[in-house]
Image: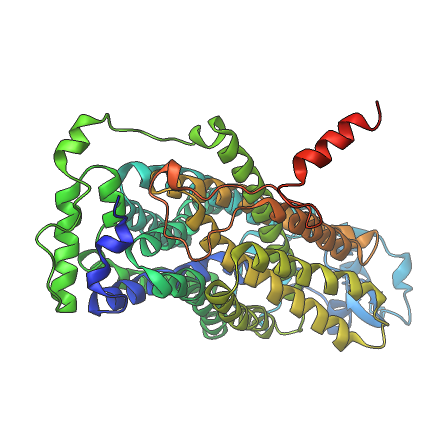
Amino acid sequence: MKDYTHSIAFLGQWGRFQQVIFFLLCISIVPNGFGAFTLVFLMDVPDHHCLVPEGNLTEEWREAIIPMKMVNGKQERISCSRYKLDVVRNLSAQGFVPGRDVNLTELQQERCVDGWSYSKDIYQSTLVSEFDLVCSEQWKQPFTSTVFYVGVVFGSFFAGQLSDRFGRKPVLFATMAVQTAFTFAQIFSVSWLMFTILLFFNGLGQMSNYIGALVLGAETLTGNVRVLYSSLGTCLGFAIGYMMLPLFAYFIRDWKSLLVALSVSSLVYLPFWWFIPESPLWLLSQGRVEEAEAIVRKAAKWNKVQAPRVIFQDYNVDETKMRPKEHHSVLDLVRNSQLRVLTFILCLVSFNMIFGYYSLSLNTAQLHADPYISAFLSAAVEVPAYISSWLALLYLPRRVAVIGILLLEAVPLYLIQLVPQSLPNLALSLELFAKYSITTGVSLMFAYIAELYPTVLRNTATGICSTVSRLGSCFAPMLLQQSIYFKYLPYIILATMAAVSAFAALFLPESFGKPLPETLQQMPKIERLKCPCITEKETPKAAGALLEGPL
């Protein structure tokens, strides 16, 4: 059977049609860079202390009413308590001077019953200052992020199956609309609960639109252009959005205004509907040959090439009618033993990669005292990582590249604990190199997964692997908390998980240089590991010797 890639080879790989698809899909991913880390700024905690109402207090007592504590050799105000206001007012009215006439340590303290006063040195407002998510309400800060990532998990799960059933293009634009609409709706939140519910629905569209764009481009483009798009184009679109986020946040320091700017900028993608076609490969898998040919003929006009009279000779209507139409679901990934093993390994490796990516991303956000510089550093290291991933997909076997990247993540993370405290820049360099490695792996892994599964299951399988991997983003904040028990414990855990994933990747099949499979029969097979010291002819004899020897 003549495969899809050969059927459309007359179009070329980089005509006007491919260029439009490539750049529009890459641009459609930019909002994912915004959305994935917007909470870094929305949920940041400004310096704060108990609010002191206006009243009969001298300037000395107004300054002294907030207790002090020693942090890293510096005196800082306590955030969650103050000296009892009634007592302080009475002492102020009698003319006592704090620290001279009154020993402050003997005064009783009370909670911040009048609310908090927040510093505006960095932000005009954040969600934390808007809804007072501090002190006894501090648990809501990480919980808010968890709710968002749970939404991402559900979105990744359902969007993959929906696009396999209803098409790549409708689901792509539907998830973009969900992301834009709920980002805008969040500015009308009157409570933390309302914001969190809207944030969950925002998460449904966050990664779903990324997966939809990735699969649509991977099925429409061919050859090295497909590799360039899957490994570099989509990821650079994400990185550009990520790097633009601190720029937006630097000039827009109010959380509501920031959300308005991010949501309104997404409206530019509405005209894309008339330029991005449905995936011809998906249409063929549904038996809609005429629609697929119409798209390819339009592409031929854009590229100014002559299309053959019949483009998809092996996909005729009679053949489609003769065999019953197959409907595939997520259950197909576990019915077949090979698919079951393949999916398990890919889910394990993907989970560990995303877990490491978000753990290091959240940790590197603290690299600098300025949150805008921190976010930019965390984003900037991804650009060379994506370029490396593209080069690896061009010239390296997929399995070798994945194993090497995982080991390059594990080694520096193991070495960090050996770095003396007098060399903080070395420890920083090792951590950034690990972030570079794992980012390269995440970019490469999405393309690898798309190449392993057939068209009828590609988006479902990609969605399942993404769903499982996104669970890692939910657990990442918990991992970072383990540093209170042992400073280097998170690094050791991440390095060990990377090493385990590298071993599991040994059992993955190779897809390098092979066309995308369209049926289950065309899928690359999982190869058994063979000892290089034993040839295939020697195996039966060796097996017989093993059976006879002990007996």
